[in-house]
Length: 341
Ligand code: FNR
Image (cartoon, rainbow, N blue to C red; front, side, top):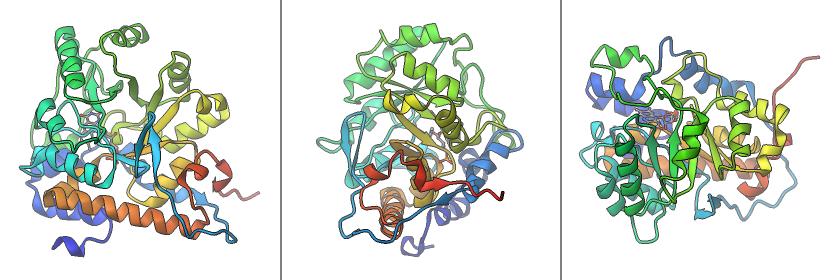
């Protein structure tokens, strides 16, 4: 369909399905095993209620926030997803430019189609990007890439700590092609994570943390932030959703919210999903598949995807009687789970 006909982020997925080869669509779309986590990510929102207030002046709405101390116009960001070149010849460059134009954060994957240098060089003046890295068993590779990331101007590392050792088993993709990346370290422990901090001067944010226990561990180890994620349901099937993990954190370690920033992702397709996560204390929310799907329209498609979600956020915040996203953050009275007594 023409880009003007795309109304929401689900339309982006349908457009990608209709445009891409079977193998390329399956690569983006697939989850692990029975895809129960993939599906739970999409449907957990049905269990939540957002509590709005009516007698509020919402004539000035603010979506701007800081992420690791850097200013961004939006509280959501483009999460690392491998191989943008499967959607568009402009690949990651399209994502850099669309993010830059919107004042949004983009965090390219280390398994990108384009090089670290090409992606870094596509940034607009003053545009801040972070970069994802995996824990390769090859220490030289790790050291070299961390240096390249720093030299290319990226300001932080999202270090992915799930999907280590082995890849998730993804049937949809396996029906077309092989299992993908190898070489991740299977011997990664908290000691190795600590040593890694000596390999770069950039702040390191563990990504793919899936239990309240590990969130607390990262807080106590002094990481500036932690990224709760089940990798879009691509790694451990039956893994909990970010919402469930956040509820555990609130119950077990509420103090961590003042110790470090928390990012989260998985199944976010609507402003209401962004708002639910932020009400539970999340600083910024990641989008994995939607940017990849919208990239079938190139940079314009990614910009359209961002502006749809931005417009939804402005509307929903106004309807909920909340003018500042930073005032919404962490106030758990704004989100609830209905109970029948
Ligand atoms: C990913 N994700 C991911 N994460 C990461 O740290 N490094 C990577 O290289 C990739 N690659 C990747 C490829 C594809 C095709 C997808 C869909 C996802 C996970 C990603 O960062 C994010 O956690 C999830 O995609 C979020 O879920 P949604 O938004 O896709 O539902």
